[in-house]
Length: 106
Length: 128
Image (cartoon, rainbow over all chains, first blue to last red; front, side, top):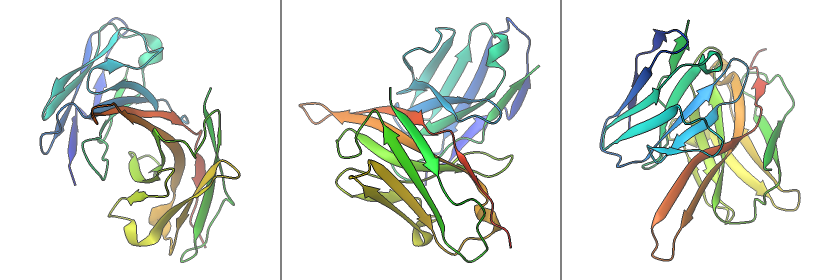
């Protein structure tokens, strides 16, 4: 199974900060990566698919980049509602595997 | 608007079978273009993909659970279900049903749109 290494596991940030989260795949996965936001007690929400395509309705301050093995989720200017845990997920093959998560906190 | 709703009996005893159902509204489990999936999250931990079923009945399971897991469709009720046999405390988790959207274009190229719809999740506790 492809392993997804996500880092950092947590980060402290302030409103207005630019935040970046990285996922590294154990083998090349082309652009087969999506990003999810999860708030406590809630289901994850799709933010980005195909590495860089913004899901409908997601604010443009979220962006994704990368291909192959290294991928980045960037929040250009952090808002209060963005404090949450973020996960990457590869879809190159099966089984799908998630990154370990990055908690963005104050 | 597509909505998914998990339902299940709640607590399960060790060695028994966990059974959950996901009811789909706004889409049909009988149509192509979607994998109907289960994903779980142990308390305080990350997400684990369990498996999917396609409208044709084909399935794909996580090898870590493969011998204990089965997913089935009930097209008459627009539902899909999960069974996990021989459960232990390690199966205690929030279980989510979800839709993975994709399509093939006329050239056969595959487009994947992510896990775009999730249920709210249901907590399953394995305890004697």
